[in-house]
Image (cartoon, rainbow, N blue to C red; front, side, top):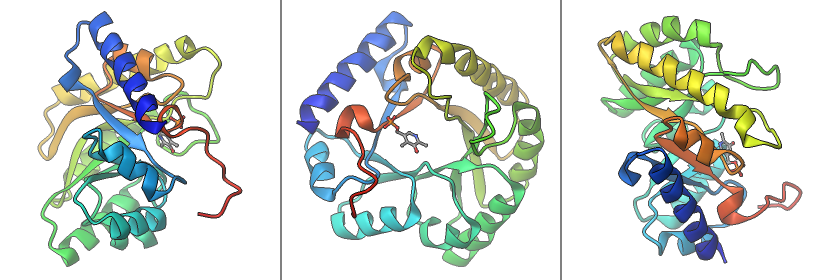
Length: 233
Ligand SMILES: *Cc1c(COP(=O)(O)O)cnc(C)c1O
């Protein structure tokens, strides 16, 4: 079942790339496995997928322990400072950095664990929703500059969680604004930053996100099915 779902997502990604004149290799599919058991992750691994996303530190660590094979684990959820030490040497990319204090904690733990570069994205709350983490577009340049000063972090780009809407076209404006913001920051060539990545697009809106320049889509439900938060893991 999940493999068929993944194939379906894959063909929709290819179609979105074709529509927007982009190459498939320029968009990474991150299979968001939060709340889902490792058996399903293993099924997805059989398709050659190596990038998985989790939003909770504890759950991610448990799955890394259990699966053992080296995979690219993306931390996509809000990160508390006291949890940084558990994942600083395990996540291939932390998508959710939204404060200098959090970045400083990552710096401190990276030094302790001997990790010379921790790749991070800055989480931007593009639609300025009260319910969401992330900083405003206006604050982003200052935060990127501050984090660029931390030697063991590398800012690779931006991440956003777009509003939950019925019609994904409603989010096009936010994805476009994200891309413009990323382009502007990239043009500044701030040392210690790369600003290549745009992590945007989820089950509901990944095709629109790709059309607007996303380089990483984070897809959970369309691959693994609905999540049941009541069920114990
Ligand atoms: C859960 C989650 C996703 C995946 O959401 P779906 O709608 O199930 O595709 C993507 N990004 C983040 C940050 C998430 O927490």
